[in-house]
Length: 461
Length: 109
Image 1 (cartoon, one colour):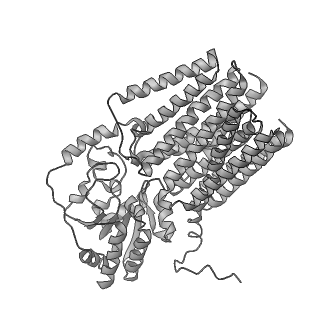
Image 2 (cartoon, rainbow over the protein chains, first blue to last red):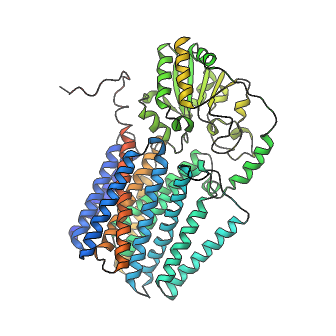
Image 3 (cartoon, rainbow over the protein chains, first blue to last red):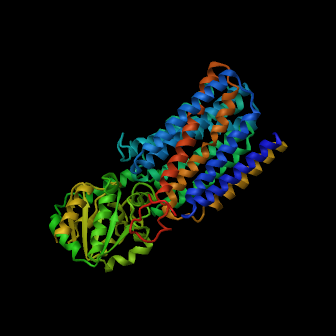
């Protein structure tokens, strides 16, 4: 490889590393993203002089870049902040798809009996890239609610997935040992796509962030593998950086949910859920509901209020209404803080992004460890569209699918106001005992409408 | 194992350690932007897509190249832009303590 190009790739790699470093600290995060983008431009520009372009090549690159850049920037600019997770899934999926296609093109050019060192990474890239593509699309569909978010399971599912995996392994061996012909690697790709779908189907919507993070790491590895095939250092380094950091991030995310990664992926979430729902279901327990005026008065004459925002707040776009209520209460001398569960919203950190969008002061956002001891001194815990993150069964019911997940101690507050659209269980699909707590007042309705009603009620109080 | 492959494996192994080390202290609030940022970085597959597209001549390679370049560009551009949008919202809120909404439209003196 040409010296100048190697040096440019080195600079690009340094940019990626510095970018990642900065992305993981609040101060430099935005800068970090910019540095990584600069590294990308350097790597792209450095690659061009090396290539021998055909006319068709120039045309398809121009068309592809134009379409991709338009689709990418429009998609990224138009997406609502609440829909960020599925957008990331989509962008990740297309990257995985690109990696798989690059590997297919390379295998085609190698002929029927490529060297193992060339064929193996290509095959790896096809399989992992296709799984990432198909899996990300299912994750997108689940989060976008194009399909049900509940786990889709059927008897013998693990066996079917096992057979798929075995068939993929068979074709891998066929390509490597017998002949690398289009039939074998196209079959490989199709099987991997099916496995990608089958792999994500049984995972519940609440666990999608972890899955997206894992598939993100997968795409990184597929890209690194393509780097081995193309003998391209930029691809190897950048792909591996993403594969490694993405794997760690996946672990950090499942840790935040108090679960192991294996439990997230293969946890038979559905089966357990059915059991618990049957036990906790129709006991005819009653809940207490309150009017906006009751709750407004309660809030207005409190000293400390802790707001627990959840995904319901996000879908209703109620972050601005929440801030308005908080400011109003503060004017009356009420101390208001927000308790942010690590997995509030649909991705870790998602809620912080949404509240920041509504200009909620940073100092009022408290993370779980910081705020959990303050609930017992709080007059009101105002739960807005959150559910699983305050469900006491995570502490007390070993059979519950969320057992062991760290939760916010909202149940220790003197009063609990539970704002929800309905009695329907949350994303994890399980009943919440907190709703039946004698200290709890339920306030049904769309989060934004309800908060607006509370604002007027507090003004009147 | 030839020399080039050995070099590549060396880069691969060292990158694993760097990748893990460099994000090990990320706070929870940055998990989503970090995921999105790393997602943009693996868009480097665009380099690979351009390499295969550049020499395309048969109908099969033309289609493969076109689709690969399109997908990879979407990944890169979308990834960086959406990450930037997320991080834009974090901007300034640590820097400016007073929440008394100073209007940012006034030009600095």
